[in-house]
Image (cartoon, rainbow, N blue to C red; front, side, top):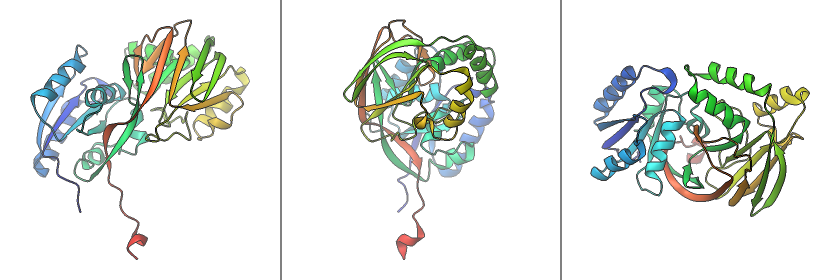
Length: 305
């Protein structure tokens, strides 16, 4: 039995994500929806009151799905608007990172991502309450959060710019002190990076949480502790070969709630959006709080034998 048809879809578009010509993208979306008999509407982000305006648009009309067309920030926006809702979120990845879509197996090309809208399954995933915010993928404190902040202020986008900013900051970055209390362990001391996620990888394909499961009712706090410069290449290798958990410089706590004391008020980010999280960061799991449109799996032929 095929997936239930999505008759009316709202596409939320970030005009500047990823440096891609959105007019071409919009044209392809319109052509696809016309061929599939799908009624479509568009919502363009402006950077001002986007969440409130999107929520108002969703109150005004019922949609069968809302699709984020952009990068991590657009996914964060749509996810926040749909949290605890029956309306599922789709993703057409068009950003620099596209972290969540990669983690859950959404095709990274436009035709493939559009195809999910007619051959899909719905999977409820966990999200995180981080102070007064919602995180649908990754929250960071420390080095990576600083890089994300500076990258967001750069005049150019893309992985090359991100790598350049990261290298510049790495040479002078000093680890900060953190105290972490969870329902499954504690940590106190300096850390290069503190990543809070129930997923696996950054948009760069670096796997920070190899054993994370996005709907198991738990999240992980992944710490990279101070390391000598001579260990940097080894850590980088492990990040890109799904073995960071085996490093002597990492510590992972799996939990359901946590408080992170951040006395230096080190910069943070939530889903790629730089945010000042203050001196105390309170995190709680929100089980199966967001419904995702994912590619429908083709049954194993052996099941029919």
